[in-house]
Image (cartoon, rainbow, N blue to C red; front, side, top):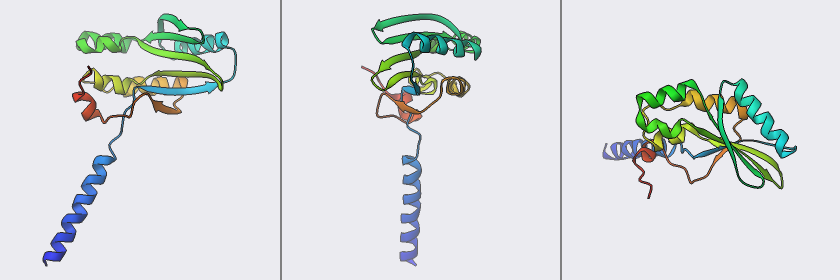
Length: 157
């Protein structure tokens, strides 16, 4: 009888541990797509697609040759700022268009990652889906990745 109890406890422990390790690890950026083409043309296409998806381009800048940053927002993000002060950091989401030897990469901030990092009480899945449907989502990158729970407790510094 004790052996059965021991094995049942081991099985429960194993199942519980696998669920913990299966927690989604969020990363700060998403590589939407990699395309061939001229940088200026890709930037124009990305801005057009973002606007067609209901996002407003509120700013843009070129930090260095071969990189173009587009800052976008929408009514939902602006309303969120009024309800939650930490959401101000999410009001302007950045989309990057970067020239690489393999082509032009389009990437963007992961709204779900930053909603947890800034401790906003909405997960922004709708915004993440909008960006994914508009720009693609090949892979997340930029950090080792943290669960939402750990990210909400993380102290930058």
